[in-house]
Amino acid sequence: MSNDEWTAESDQEWIRVTAAGINGKNSFALNYDFNETGVTRLATVTIRAANAKNIVYSFKVSQSAIFDKAVLTVDRSPNTFKASWNGVIGAQNYFIDVYDINEQLVGSIDVGVNTEWDLASDPLFKTPIHAGYTKLVVRSVTENVNIFSESDQVEVNSHFTSGKGTESDPYIIGEMESLLNITDANKVAVNQGAHYKLGFTPTLNSDFIPICTPENGFNGIFDGNGITIQNWSRIAHPDERNFSALFGGIGSQGKVHNIKFKDCTIKIELSPASGKISKTNNGFSFVAAVSRGEIHDITLTNCSISTEAGASPIIAGTIAGINYGSIINSCFALPSNH
Image 1 (tube, rainbow, N blue to C red):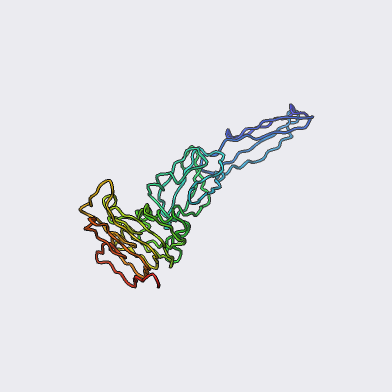
Image 2: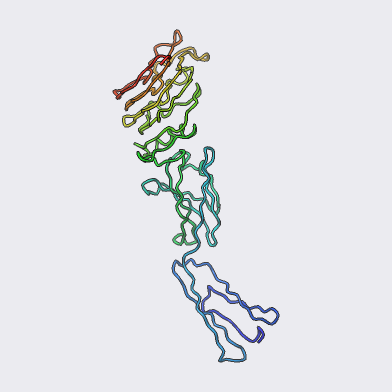
């Protein structure tokens, strides 16, 4: 029979039947609305022969309340931190939900209808509100915000080469960016007491900005992994920055250990632009400008600090410039032939 000899209809408005015929063959298509009800719904489609009322076909259509989830991909390298995912049919908005190591929701990034996002420049990571081990989920939301799907979690480290910051799985500092990121990570509550392990040999110069500050000292556990920082020669101008060291400050809960310095020098002199020393300075050293925590297992070989005439009073020391009752153990200064 031809297409005009039968009819098809649905008993629900959310699903519609269209009929077409090619070369005398019957066909029909179902067109349906996206399900935003939050519950599975049913419809009955009935096909009737126009000239034979006894010929009736019917079938049930079930529509799930669950729609596809996004597939999240994260591109993380020393200079890149981006998320991207496929578009989800029916999604009117996307959110990136950020969780910390304790499965606590740190924040949700509203990215609108975008399917990629530069996480490195987002305030949540740049400020930072969160830094370090991270779990990311893309939430695809319909017009009804209570109807959504979630991508599988993707684990990533926002500020370091790898690691979770635990004793058994410390943050690995594998490049200079990671080393400098310790300062930001130290500001985040979840990283108080976090473990860090040096995984490369830093090349430092006079432009190096110390990790943390005397006022906001490092409050984690830093393992230098026996690595030697060598030939770090710097000229310090106390009138420009009144502290200089690997760590600007070590807090009362901070611990730094197992690192070596060889053939390193500090020359403290007046800045040509100023010609005078600030009345307050926070110390000059190789390990910490100011320490309130613990420093141990440090070896300095052929390292020295010198001061330009007229550039005193300066507070300086090879291990810590200023020591506020911190614990310093097993630290040695050796001659060049050792």
